[in-house]
Image (cartoon, rainbow, N blue to C red; front, top):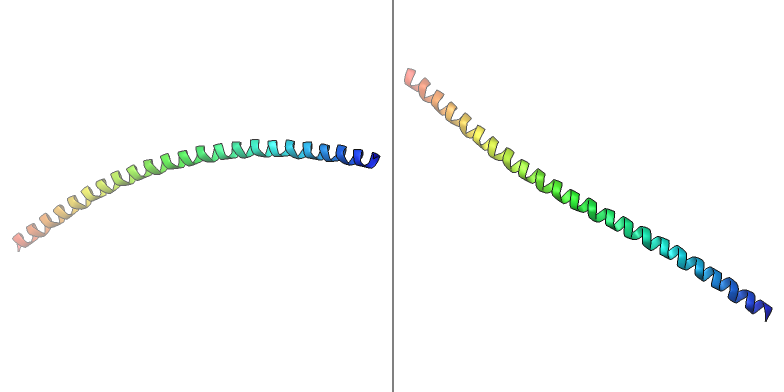
Length: 83
């Protein structure tokens, strides 16, 4: 009878410790998941900003290439006219 009482008391203490550890684990797991969501949102915003900047840079580069092609064409026409 005494052994059973000790067994049940120790079992209850162990169960209580496991429940407390599980609560801490869940608390920190929720904190980590919240941070992951914040990081994911930040990365998504940065990716969209980079996409816009690359599109703008592409448009600028296209304008520069077009201008260089026109200048090259004009120079070629002038050199042909001189000959």
